[in-house]
Structure formats: structure tokens, C-alpha cells
Image (cartoon, rainbow, N blue to C red):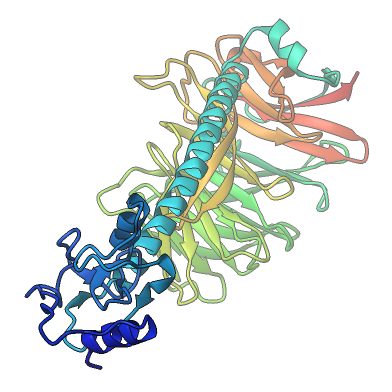
Length: 502
């Protein structure tokens, strides 16, 4: 729309009774009227404080400039033509050839900037709050970590008792029974044993006492009266490990003669004999699959067999480049979780997780070796690992831990509950620890020539019993109707200690 300045001036003159002379000088025009404000010489905008407006005389100004001009004048007049004006005469207009800066987007961006700055300030306050909270939690974690180390490695007794709110029950052990296994000197061929209360048997690996069979086998004893029932001849080499089936009347034995055998415990007949390329060191049944067994070998491989087809292993678990013997192997029995095989080698400990397609993922467990043995208790879902002294730690350890899954990254690890201090030496590669009833752990302490009992709940020593010849080759806990027992095997005897809680 064209702006006709003179029309408005003529109308104003007619309203006031004025006559315009044809000789009157025209109101001068500035060439920049269409682009800049004559007061500040800045470009107009079509919105905001500097929006273009005009007076009754028709001259164009920026709104804030003309308002400031009129406020400063006693006799208000147009800055260009000096005609009298009033503030009420101001009108916002649009010109056809007006060059104005569109500040709508600018105003929008300014508003967004202000909102962003406000949100930034709120976020900084929130971050500052969480940083302070993190520092407090880190301090608490560090205090708890120090407390755990003190309790684990044998802190001051008085400080420990102050932290325990409930009294500690002491365990007193009494000799119940001693059974002679071997009457020869240095008879360390009796390395392992196993007990089944439901089957009422004790099976002890030993050398044959007769010349008819010069090899090694199992002594079968009655648990009720501790009398020997029969000797079962089996292997030409020493028996390194054995394991009773959790359900069936079977026992699995592995020997240095590179064979493993499955024996019927009722009729004492050998059911299966399997030759292996590498000598087996350890064995275990799979509690979730009654037909599966696991054999750990001298070359570091764990072979999983199905007794329905023993022509070869179903799976072979190994670590590339690690050929250390497998000292212990166990299977985690949790119905809602996939199969997890725990493997303790001489220097490393691993968890193998079975995938749906039958493959296995392996995870290195953060435990310190060299390892002596490893057991897993299904009831408490905890593992017990015994270790020898090493270059950094000059004493043996009996470590209680539980498995846990981490989300980032998705791995299986273990969380240490207690690490009970053992002796300064561990002469033999033997099973020197076990779980006992009442949530107790037993561990051999060579320096003190005793088996020490520890409470898993508190981490405190709650009892002990002496060891003959300071030698422990295998030990187990037993919970029967007649009482609770700690059973351990040395070179010549197997000893039963009954304990009472006081």
C-alpha cells in the first residue's frame, strides 16, 4: 500500500481550518526514509521496540525513537517538519517499499536461548547435587571396603565384636570315630573319599592291601557302623578324584592310568570304562542332567560326557594356550539359569556358560591362585576356593564367593564374601576346605596344625580341631540324624569329628 503523506497533512489542515498555499515549501524527504529511522539512522523492524510507525504529518520513525523524542520535548513536534503532534497520533504502518528487518525469528531464537540458559542452570544445579551425592557414596564405599578387608584378613578382635550385634556360637568338636585306611608308611594314595547318607556308604580311594590285585580301588564302608563292606578293585594308577551320583547308585572315579570308570555302588560292578588321551585329574556329575558327567584333564581340558553314549565327549571346554591341569570342576545347579560350569585350574579359575545353541562362553573369575580345590554348595549358592601362597600373598586362603552377572559388559563374575586366612604353607595339592552345616566353613591351617572353623555369616573363627601328622588330603561336612560331623582324610586314617554348638 502506498503511503500518501500529503493527503494526511491536507486532511489535518482542513480539520484545523487552515489553507495551504501553493507556494508553501514542500516537506523535505530523505532518500533513506524507506530504509532507516531518521532519529537513530538504524534499520526499522516490523515488530518489537523499533517497529516502524508514523505521526499525523506522515513522517516515519522507529517507535522507541519517536517516543523518546516526544518525551524529551516540552512542546511536542515532529522531528522532521516541526508540526505539533501528540502521542495519540502515533500509528503503526506498513510501507510498500519499506526495507525492514524481520525480527520474528530473532525474537523466537532469543526466547529459545533464554529457555536453554534457564534449563542449563537447572541441569547444572542437578549435576552439582548428584556430584555431591556421589562423593558421599564413594566415601561410604571406601569405608565399607576397608571394613571388609579388616574383617577378612583378621582385624582387631575387639573392633570386630563391636560391629557384631548378635552373639557368636562357638563350635566344639569331639572325636567320634577313627577308621584306619592304610597301614603302610607314606601311604598318600588315599587321596579322596565321598559319603552318602541316603545310601549309607563311605567310599575311600586306597591301594589294594592284597597281592592278588596290586592296583587301586575303593574301600566301601557302612556309614551306620563304620565297618568295611568290601574293597572294589578298579585302576592300575592312583585314583585322583571321585564323585557319588546325586541320585543314582553310581560313583565316578578318575585315575592316573588315563581312565575313568563308573561303578554301581550296590553290586560294586564296573558299568563303564573309558580311556582318555590325557590323564584325568578331577571329575563331577551334572546335578541338572543325571546322564552327564564332567572330567577335568591334565592338559587343561574339561570333557563333558553323556553316559548313554561314551564314544566321545559331548563338549570339550578349554582355554587356548592354557594347558594347566584342572584341579576341580563343578556345575551350578539353578533351574531358572543356563548351565554354568566352574573350572579351577592350577593358576586360573573360569566360569563356562552354555548357550542355547550348545556353545559355551567363558569368563575369567577374579580369584587369586595357585588353586588347591573348589567346591560349590547348591543350598547357599556359594563357591569355596582354596589357594596356595603366591609371590604377592604369603599365606593360603579359603575364599567364599557367589556368582553374579554384570550388565555392562554382560559377563559372569564372582563377588567375594570372605577370604579366610590359612597357613604360610600348603605342601600338598589337596582338598583342604569344605562347607559344614550351620553355614560354617572348615579350612586347614598348616601353621597352626589344625582345621579351623569359620562362620560365613560373621567371618569369625568359631572353632577348631587338631590334625594328626598335620596332613589333610580331603575333607567333607556331614549332616545326619545322629548329629553333624566334620570328616577328614589323612595318610592313614579317616577321622570323624562330631560338633556341638554352645
